[in-house]
Image 1 (cartoon, rainbow, N blue to C red):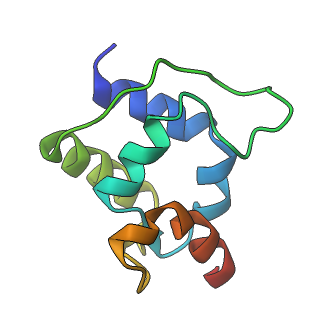
Image 2 (cartoon, helix red, strand yellow; image 1 turned 120 degrees about the vertical axis):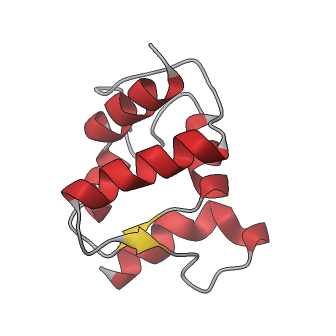
Length: 99
């Protein structure tokens, strides 16, 4: 499975992404890569969801992934939510708070 297909599978199964689904936000590349580097969804405290070998996506795969997300969530766009890149680990919390 290529990185785009794997990222879509992970996002489809992810409790973290289900919470922001339908909202106006999509995480920047750095946030996506930090999420994919974990190998699991930190919101999956019961270990019921997919686990994966940590990986990183490049800008071209990110663009395709973002386009796919926006096709499903047409009001969404990439947004740093006012956070500095050094606080990328707070991105999902900030997005949850705004939805």
